[in-house]
Amino acid sequence: MVHFPAFAVEQCADSISLKQLLSYAAADGAGDLEKTDFMTRRMTYLDIRGSTELRGNVASLYAPEANISPENVLITATTSSACTLPTYQQLHDVPLSFGVKVSLWKLRPDNGGRHDVTELESLLNKETRLVIINNPNNPTGQTISTATLRAIVEAVKAHAAPGCVILSDEVYRPLFHSLPADAPEPPASILDLGYPHAVATGSLSKAYSLAGLRVGWFASPRADIIEAAALRRDYNVISVSGVDDMLAARALGPNARRQVLERNVELARGNREILKSWISSRPGRKEIRWTETQGGTTALLYLGEGVDDEAFCRRLCEEAGVVRAHSTSFALA
Image (cartoon, rainbow, N blue to C red):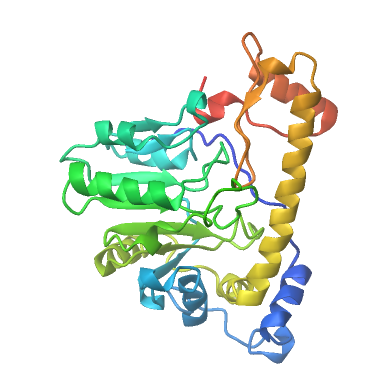
């Protein structure tokens, strides 16, 4: 029997309203909803795999070298569908629930949560068929540089099964707010590297502040993977809401998404500075450790020996109205 453990934690960028979304979309020439067929369109199943406009806008998120066309994109009802740890719970618990052997590639605080490709190589073998990464990482807020992504691809080619898929959860991409000064460029998508067995997932819920539109996507140069995913999806959600699809297409227009991301980068930088200031001002602050975040909207704090992190989080919520997740939410306790 398949068993799904209780889901522990959820978080996203500060949401925007429908009014804000439509004002951003106006910069892309999107007309008044009442002057389109939005109000007269029949509420039946529309484009099962996602409208051509929405899939085209998703495809445009990736570099030309990725060769991702609308046919390489499948629209889903959000993206929750060897794995890094800590990371988003579903990335390791869903495979485990189906009896898959999962090896955990652990990010260690003593090296700043960086992705040690040598350690990944030690976990790979000729039976490894799927490697899952999370970029930017949730909860550490660390990013995987383009150079490290290339090293991951080469490690998979050398040590994993032929045709091993690299699945990159990129729901916080491209919310890169505090990259190192010497970073030559924002990290690439896994699709941009030209690896033929790559899959990227994305969503409007996180970086784009539209969790109320239950829209995500699944993109890959491999047509057989898109077809297999579409076939299985027919047994559960069939398609996303036609209303969500139309609004999502507007959200991912080039000018609309630029404005949303500019807003969210500014918010993330401001909140990061608040957290950084709090850490530096605490009595006994040497006990509080973190690796300063680079992307996304999450951070991972180490509060020191003897601190009951669950009690701390409860008190913070009750007394200050600030919600935090304790370590057991990420299998770290």
